Structure formats: C-alpha cells, structure tokens
Amino acid sequence: MSILLLGGSPHIPSSSSRLLLHIGEQLALHGHAYSKLDVRDLPARALLQADYSDVDIAGAVRAVAEADAIVIATPIYKASYTGLLKAFLDLLPQDGLAGKLVLPLATGGGHAHTLALDYALRPVLHALGAKQVFTSIYANAQQLDWHEERGLSLDAPIELRVQAGIAEVSAGLFILQGARRPAAANGETLAPPSRTLQEQPYTPSLQTA
Image 1 (cartoon, rainbow, N blue to C red):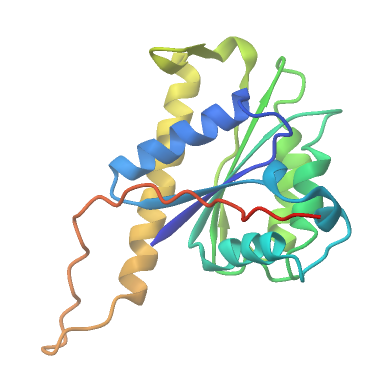
Image 2 (image 1 turned 135 degrees about the vertical axis):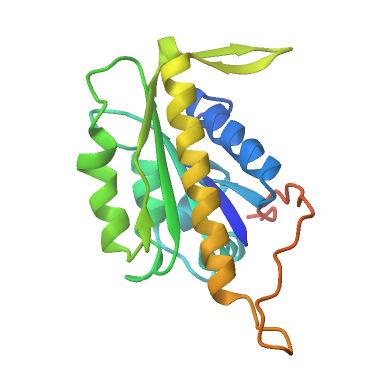
C-alpha cells in the first residue's frame, strides 16, 4: 500500500511542508511506503494550461492515481487553501480520488482559519470521489517549532491530533490491504508484510524550453 504526500505550498521549506514530511516519516515507522510531490515543482505553464501531454504533469496525475492514501498539506491564504493546490486538483479526473484515503493538513498564522479545510478543501475531496476523508489537522505558527538540528517539534494538542491522524490512515491502509490481499491455497488470508518500506521521493523530470 502506498501513500502520496501532496504539498500545496508555493514555498519550500515551509511550515506545511515540514508538517507533511513529519507525518510521512511517522507513517513509514508504521510500515507504509510513501512518495512526495510538491506541486510547486511542476512546470507552471503546463500546470495552468492543464497540459496533459507534459511529462511531469502526466507523471504527477499518475502518482495520484497509483496511491492508496494521500496526505495533502497547504498553507491557508485568504481563508482558503492555495491556488497552486487548486490548479493541480483541477487536473484530476472527476473520480480522481476514488477509493483513496485522504488526510488534509493546513498551517496558518493564527486560529482564525481553523475550519478553512472543512469549508474549502473537504468538499472538493469528496467531489473527487475520495473513499474516506479523515479529520482535518490545522496547526498555527505557535504550535510548530523548527530547529535545524532537532527538526520539527509540535506542541501537545497538535501532537495528539497528528498521532490520531496517523493512526487513522495506518489502520485504513491495513484494512484496504486486507480487502485486496489474495487468498492462500487453503483459503486463508495471507499475512501482511512486516518489512518497513523506505521513502521513494517523486522527482519531476527536467524540461528544457
């Protein structure tokens, strides 16, 4: 089972990208493979023109199609998720998230936009056919602390929500895995693999004008 970390921030590094990677690393400790796609790395012209013939655009859409779960992270701008992320979601087919588990994340400067994910992004995820959209996680700047050596630290309330989100995604993936696992010769269900899979980052190919 695979997880795609989908970053919608126009700036790297950023609070949302750090939180996204933190959750990906935690999911890896639970035995799940993940890849990462930052929308800002896609060619801007091809993205805005919905150019499906572009190699990077086609690869990004395919990465979504092949994922079993998607963790989406965005900063909150003007009480909503980024236009960059919206442009990418608009590339997906109408059922582009069908059968997939989705965990939405957002970061912002304060508490004013805590529900922005639920009002703005969640309806889009459901419209794209997501099998399950887990409880959104919103963190403000005061709840995230970045240190070059220690990495990202979360305050207690956000840490609890993050761990709950990770547990939901992990449990959901194992349920999907059980549903898809082939039966053994004696009719019993085969046991899931125990080996922890490592990160497989998605890297768009370089295009020249």
